[in-house]
Length: 245
Picture 1 (spheres, one colour):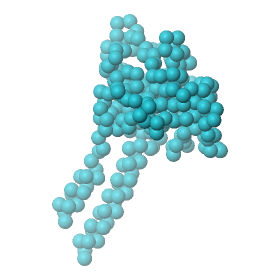
Picture 2 (cartoon, one colour):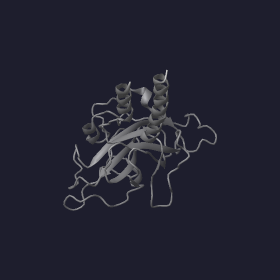
Picture 3 (cartoon, one colour):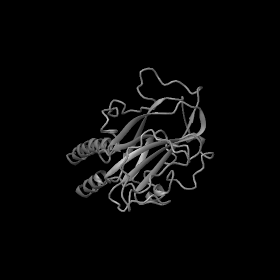
Picture 4 (cartoon, rainbow, N blue to C red):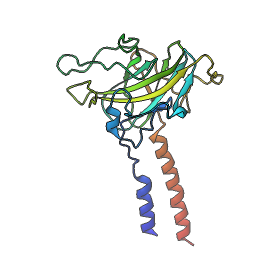
């Protein structure tokens, strides 16, 4: 009996491993990054080489032009740095900032900048890194256009990997993308639901004081830990009752 209980404790207490570094949760990402290849996330511009949008229509999310939506993500492996959210109206080509000087990290806040070469726009830059393992989020407003081949890009810039590079396979940046369509015929969000696609953690909106561009909640792995603890207490009680019979 004691050995069975010890084994159960080990299983429930064991952490859930994830080789990916960032995991965009909403809007629906191209791939479920948890358990995926972390090196694939380094491949610009979307971290999913060989992915076919046409083969995965179930992962395309539709919004109205100009909608304000909530982007949600987890950082599964902690790194110092910041996040950026960008939008491409046609395809998946995005701007990756060049080094400053000889391998220095970018320092400018490029929110609102549109790259004339790719047509991509940085919707929100320099989003503050939050608590690893907790749900993090930021509200962004989509462009007021219609498009049927647009992409939302979420990137993490890590400042512990100097010198900085923006090569095709960079050690300094991780990429996630979500495929979107913007259409005037998209369904309206539910009344009083907050930002579109807000999800279960909508009670913790991103801060808008100009200094902190993100937020976190007690979701994600924290909630999973609470469930495991609850299950563990129930199991211990059950085994004790069995032992007294």
